[in-house]
Image (cartoon, rainbow, N blue to C red; front, side, top):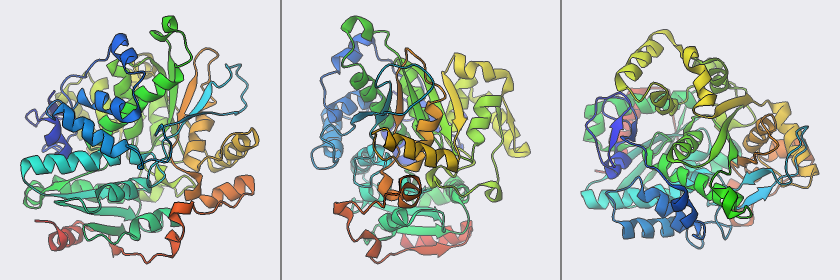
Length: 484
């Protein structure tokens, strides 16, 4: 399996190279040259596997240059006993959410992705990425300085996965004042010498733009061995594919063998940077029977507009709202380029041309392709507001379901708009509600305490460097602190 750039200016590279590369040298994103396929027989043979072994099977289809035994060990180290709270790593929890659509009992189900060390779905990919990056660097005999941008959960998940790793330093950009107290404390309280937190004046998109500017400076990138763990990193996309397969297998455990081959589910994904739902798109292309992929946006609903109209209009920092689901406060989705690459027939020349138009005009018009978004790719979307989040958290709790976080509430709200009588709907959980106590209190009247294993987190001293939205300042900081 080789990987190419969406923009066509990179020679095919291996999976291990893509792990360390981040942005392609032409500014595009690495994608599989050909998508691996999973047959119904192969899928059924995975039913009895635990999560670590299933992840190894799925990742082996992408990481063909990594020894299979080594890959299995890395997955066991990432998802083995003690790393995740739930014994099965990703539990499925039926919700009692009311709707006007007559659906089967248990048809709206939460896919629990927040059982890891930072209580967010990002742990699912980051724990694997920490193992695989260290492995790839050791084989190559080099070091890596990771530059990342976070709107909330990516930063802590990356830092917890990479803290103390040999040959790796992390430079994580976050927007000043735009994350919850819990999210800031998780990141800024880490004292490991290889972890560098940088609070940037602006919003997440400013952090993401700084990352792209510095990573796009090829001389600087090569001189300081820069890589990334943002959702543009192919390792994260491939690792997330695994839990779509896991969710389908667990959702069909009670289904007869005769029905399984054609048994379809729909999946709703709270989305900001389009990475998590892109993994579902890849799983569907690989052959997983997914009927619809439902994108849930918050008030920063650029992606919802795109999937409803075919027109993509990224917004400026000033136009990006600060909402009560802050990890989705993103107005320019980096991973959308990978989806558009598929829409354009995987033609890098066409992709490069439309991206030049986007850069020049600030708008991308694919309205002629709009009917294909759902008909061919199964992608639909919806928007949720603060009032929707509050109501959804309250209703799910009052119906006997778990207390959910605001991003997951966005997902449940939009999922309720696409329920069908014969197609179970799964909603990907984003984080534990303890990370967002204010909106939970508003919705339910319940004051959530800190999880026992994180008691005292908010009182720990914090270490962070504040910085203007300035690429030269960021370069200077990296030069002074990079691992060489």
